[in-house]
Length: 369
Image 1 (spheres, rainbow, N blue to C red):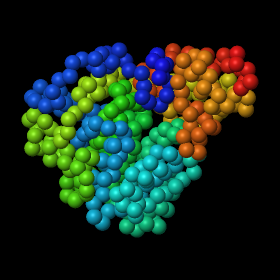
Image 2 (cartoon, rainbow, N blue to C red):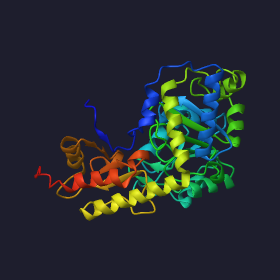
Image 3 (cartoon, helix red, strand yellow):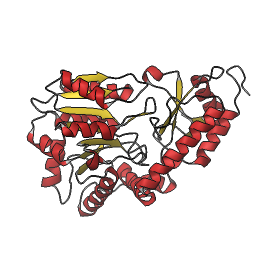
Image 4 (cartoon, rainbow, N blue to C red):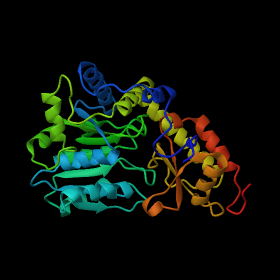
């Protein structure tokens, strides 16, 4: 594959220079007093981004590995999960959950709108034995934002454990884990946190911790009960059960420092402001945003193709004529929309203006300029 593409996809993102420099450093051991101090400090910084007093684990793997860990570790004997799904990644959660428990219930909502509390309440009324609810914050397959604060508040009022996929939102969209009552929150290194691919991040609130440590769920590598055990018994030199992905972890630390240096509020405002700019500029060129402001994600901008310039053709021409990579739609949006990652260093008017100008230079499907 060609080097030097300008990545404007919804992750992985292009890294800041100081973050890339971390990846080039010599490998150091993933254990010992120095590494353990560095690891623990980094976990402390991640807590400030999750906005939690709970625990955070960095697990070598993709965001899906984090979801697997959160779901598999928290489902004990007698537990039953309800998955709220209005898109590809909601369906992914359901697929993971059903690998542990075929009784997993799914509340399927049309992919063109957010999940409502009324739909959650109706689904629970039909499934009296539900003990946990899982949902996606930013459904990145379509660029739709779900009202997580409202959904988790309702769940907590019924003493239901909540699991949230924040893979495409953490660090770019407001998410207050403890205040909103999120028990398990999953993210990944390669999106708004400005790190390279390779680390799943799982934040565990106090209620979820006791659930995990008390149950007898299967598995080892992705079982958070094992991660808790090693965090305690090897606390002073190797506080995790595996070989840590040292370069990825050190690079993530740089990304996390950049997030906190900017500040969560300012950062969320920047992502929102730039997303509005892109959607308005593309609308001016005749493209229709997938969703209106208010339910459209600030980090994943999804736009429908024009009648004379399809989403697929536009993405192909951006790649071949301008060296810019955007993504296509997923699930039922495949072939209908193109998706732009508005994350971290990508989320600036300067970067996005270059993209808009490239789109503006195109004619119709039959006109190659």
